[in-house]
Image 1: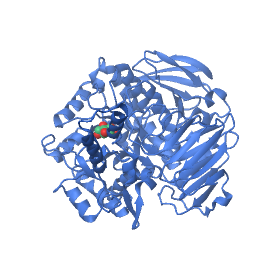
Image 2: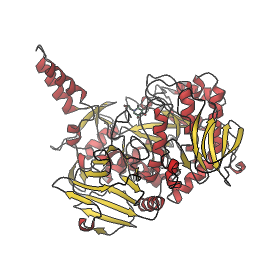
Image 3: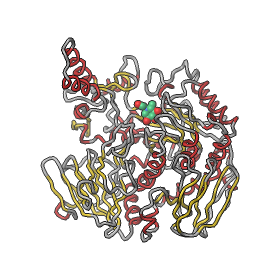
Image 4: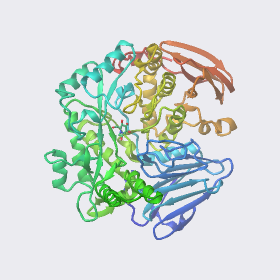
Length: 632
Ligand code: MIG
């Protein structure tokens, strides 16, 4: 059962699509405090209770013992002491003595102290007093999740080819670079469906333009790749370059479509293109306008996009850098003591993504000027909705691949997400794994991390182990940052090991696709923590390195350097299957702890008794898969 509690006049986030009757705070079931500018509520947790949720967020599947913040953040260091990542997914589920779900539908900052200040207490604090909170009760945790998901609407389903293997890098600078990726993958016999175009495909980083020198006759180039069975996926950034004569900027400016400052002038900040203006995605008219801009690229045959920098990420604001430069100029010739030096340094270090800048932005919501901080967590979600709404109008559902960096619940209906700038760290294999069920609870089914890791240099074994987890994630994309070691599968010795792992993905695509569609249609989860399926099993309850997948199986990737296998816990008797290329090795294992060996070119999978997984023959492209061949 879902009960909705309303306070003040909440901004309509469009997260919930079912209608519920609002109740006042009088009957709100948690202890709470309402001040002039904050609302907080508290509940206690029994020692054995588990708190799930928060979607894309740091730390474990069980969120207890840390403090999180819903505040979409462009932060490329996903260490365990962080509180926020790029998304704001305000759903938590307390499971144990009591089962209760809470969705805080409020697009400003929310702080979740889940046993950080006091181990047995959860305190949720909203930076504002206009909100809806949905409290969901049900017999089992999975019932609560399903009911919540039914309220927020069906998850986005991408085209089938989006389940193929995808290769990205910042950047494949020109057509030759892209061609060489495809050729090398083909030569190594490694399947591939998509190649990504990072910011350098654009002319001076201007959205919806092409660098013609790098990609001459882009439309026929795209068509040629498509004949080879390859989809090119360009990036779109939130900021629009301020440049006279650039159509998107000129139009946006003339129509007043950009975010403003208090004085009514456009808010301007530097991102990749230099000084940019920022479309006011909170305004439906602007969404419609910006969404239609994607047509420039779909007209050229593009059918997939990734939306970036939409927290929004700001390197500096024009006002901020001016102040900083004045400060520096005033100090010229001075003898800088420590405090003045550090103050100056902090001024420059603090230019990016500054709170002061976010506070200076205004949106037009139904004719009212609304400060950005009140709606911060909707900005990227609404950029993505702008495109999603256009795609659906123009092409119908499920034709265009799209995923976003920033997101809020509700965007799961039009798009997927990726987990942003992770590192080529062993620990990030597990971070990736832990976010999967949490994202699923919040409606985001099409998701994945940068396989092999984005920042810093990857190693061959790390990429292989990362990919062996990625075989199961709906988005299976290898991506890495500018200046880091090349990590395409063919770059390392024995590329056939990469072929073996990626072919397993293609063998599983019919199964993974069906599992995905079923989860979307039934408001279910593709990935579940073991604790949800085996709540009475004390070992399963604490397992954070394995996941249940669909109704049939369990995954347990190897996540440690130099390990030739791992310890795995079987909550019931299962068949241990090692998949490698077309090879399948099976072993029956009993419930309990086992050490299993897994070579670098093998993908481990555990199948429940009486269940079957269909496999088809691998192919170089998803379009060449014989789906009907898939048999148990
Ligand atoms: O400031 O476009 O998360 O995937 O390669 C970095 C360059 C901007 C951040 C994205 C990343 C992408 C990169 N972008």
